[in-house]
View 1: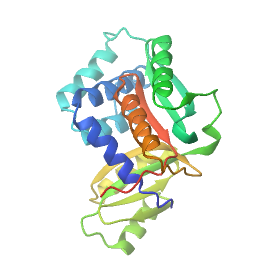
View 2: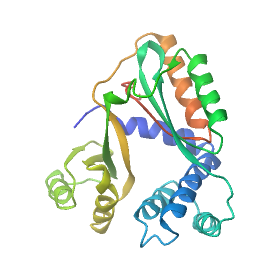
View 3: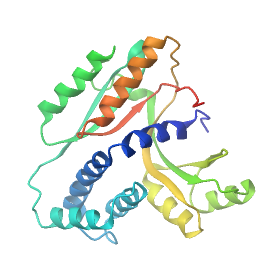
View 4: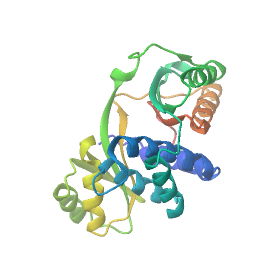
Length: 244
């Protein structure tokens, strides 16, 4: 697999959202509202909702909040019409960035995203300008609590994974994006603790930043994007430095 310290990126994002729990609740709530409208409120018949409930619980969203969001969406109480929008651009020194949003006001979101790029040394580009550098893959992260690598390998392939990489803290499993929910459930059934399970955009090549000003601006760009309620996911090809 990539060997590019993917989990460091996830940890950085998680630490940022832990500081403002309301942000992650809002983002997952929007996703739930959309998938409930599309596929109904029963997670047994709506695999996307089932995956989102697992994601919410992994992010410590209380069960009462989850139930309230589902009931509100199913009953038509949430009148906001969210639409998916995707923005592509370049961060400092040409780092490729893709921003996935769920918004009830496309003009507002476009203006805010463009402002972040302009402010922190990047520029927003046309659709398709960087997406060709990414491919969608299912990524499942499990906790490494003294795992036996041979057993993990057998279980991963039995559960539908295509590849895996084990480190001191975690094991990162790659699978087809449409299978990520099934792989997560199969691994959980075998007793593994799943920390994250999502279809993600993985870059084919990576960019490094050596200039301190570029690094500072790239971090600020990511922080501002991730802090925006309309932004669901931010993908980039910056090979972030290992945490000390």
